[in-house]
Each structure stands twice: as structure tokens, then as C-alpha cells.
Length: 344
Ligand code: 13P
Picture (spheres, rainbow, N blue to C red):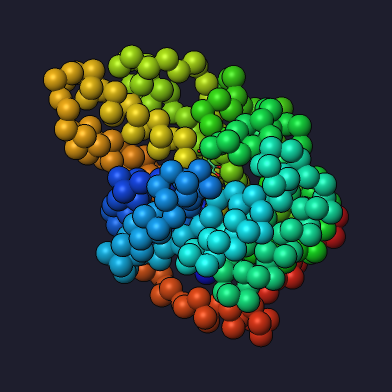
């Protein structure tokens, strides 16, 4: 993933990181990447690894990489809760891990700054020796995803820019997730977000201090009204809600955001498509009758995001280097883990 992010920084674009739990989702992501000629990050939460079973999921991603040799692809552990979770992902063959030390191992209780630094640094040392990229988190996101999260609105623990600088310096992470008021899931904002709830000013302040650090926006689904409407039209009961407007993500990308996490929008697209088939054709019982439209609906959303984030067209810009070459780069210092820090 480090290579994908470095290339994205050079090109001034963001790369969507899409969650995967099953075959239809990885197929949708890869079809969209192929369609738009995009490099891509696929990521699995602990919940996904448990749902699909590690080996099934890993082999699906391996198949995706084999079938699409022209697409640079990183396989990322989303929200690792402990050193052991990250280690097990690395041992399976993931090329990137997130150590979310902003929470304690229970994945719910906010951790202290010192605890976060200690566990993240431990993962960085283990991962870099093996050529694997590490994302850390400073500040705490809102909401809960797959049982992981502190809950709340996302405004309780917005990242402090000075702490972000200290965290990046002490841990040597490759990518830094920050909390700017977003949360996981469909219910992020009760109206179109403005600066009082979506703290783009904090993101910009962090980018000013850490101009070369790859920033990560979590909870970046836009929760489009048309996807909500399809679900509700066919028997769903979603309450009215707002996500992160794409133009705010694009502002983030102009200010150092290189990885953009999207899960909920794809869930909405698939569920809407499945509901529509079952509602309109209650006599159907072959799962392919609704999984195929679900896969197509997800492909459409992913392709749209790839275009909006700017990664479209960049798949052929570079050749993926081996994990051994990346490990060597960390060792000889050609891949820097020392952030450039600008004065206040
Ligand atoms: P959304 O729920 O907004 O899609 O966020 C997903 C995410 O951040 C995964 O880590």
C-alpha cells in the first residue's frame, strides 16, 4: 500500500479503500477498477475475516490479483485492534495493516496517547521488517462498525494537530487516519454537514504541519439519497441521514488525503438492488437472481468513487514492486518513516 499511496501523492489523487466480505464484493471492486483503470485498496475488517473465514477471503483477494495483473492492488487489514490481529494478517499475506491503537483492544474504549504510540510502534517495527505498510489512527472516530468503535457522533475525540505530529514522529506510520467528525455507518449527520460537524479545518491544519504524510479519511461514505430511496421504496426502513459530501472528500484529497475508506455506500447499493428483485419478483429463489444485480450496483458506486477520487486512469502509471523490495527500502532508509514537520 505504501507504493500506492506514494504514487497517489505524486499524482495528487486519492485511492478508495473498499471493504470486502465476500466474492460478489471483490468482483464488484475489481470490475470497477478494470473499468476505470484504477489502482485499488481492498480491505477486510476483523468482522469480515470472521464472517468469510481468513483463508476463503485471502484466496478471493489472491484470485483478484491474479486475474487482474494490470491493476495495482493492496490488501489491507481494516481496524486491527491489537498487535496479534495485525501479525496474523501479515502472516496470511496482507500487504498492509491498520493498527487502530486509538481504542483499547476491546475495540470500544478510547486508549491513552502513550498506549496508542506503544502498540502502533510495535506493529510498525514488525510490519516494516516484512515490507508491510502500516496505517495508524490518532483521535477517535465516531460510530460502530462490525462491533468496532467508540460510538458517539465523532466530535468527542477530534484529532489534535500537535498530537498528530508527535504520533507520526514517534511511530513512523506510513499513513495516518485522523478524526474530523466522521463516523462509520449510515447515520453520520442529521443534515448536510457544515464546518460545525465536519472538521475539514482540522484536516487542513494537520496537512499544513505534516505536508508529506499520507492522511486517511475513515467513515467517508456519502450515503447518497438515491440509494437510501431505493431501499425504502422496496420495503426498507432507513431514517433520513447524510454522509460526507464528495466535494468535501475532494477538498481532503487536495490537502493530503490519499486513502478514502468506503463501505456503507456499497452496502446500501447492494441491499437496494437485492430488495428490488425480491420485492418485484417474489417468486424468485435463485441467489444469483439478486446477487448479480447487487454486484452490478456496487460496481457502479465503486467506479463512480474511483473517478471522483481521481485514481481512475492511474493503474498503468507504475509497476507494483515486490514486498521484499519494500522491506529493503525501509531498511536502507530509501522509504522514509520520518515525517516532514512544518513549523506552526
Ligand atoms: P463508511 O461506513 O462511511 O463507509 O466508512 C467505512 C470505513 O471507514 C471503514 O474503515
